Length: 198
Image (cartoon, rainbow, N blue to C red):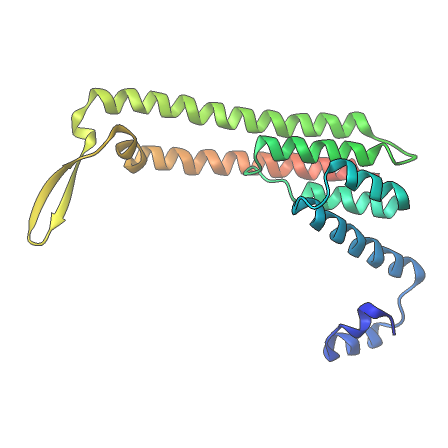
């Protein structure tokens, strides 16, 4: 029994026994998956930088390990990823690609560019919508007033422009629809990027 098998629960070991012995290829794939997870964990925790990760992957440079590392990096991207993190992971994904015999760099770059563009458009549209609503709230003092229940009496509270905007139903609806739209587009771009891995 290998080291990783000894850490399995008895039920998992029993299921493995019913499935049969793993092939050499399956064992290698599991080992590559664990190695990629370990290296990326160090990378995400800033214990190694992009160059350090690239050097460690270069030492082994097995195609399945390289692909697994790229796939996990891509899976870590979301529409909530900051532009700085997207750039950092972009560099690593493209750096890993240079270690492969069969490179697909132009397709990866195009998809990463699309993800970057989606983030910029998302931010720009939110800023434009916020500015438009801000003008409306600044012009209409009633939108900055809020009724608050205090015991049995109702009091009128004056909100700041920003507080009023955050409480407007049309702003909340816009944000919900906007986030759903861009999350969906970002997910599709991420899946296309994964399909380009070789």
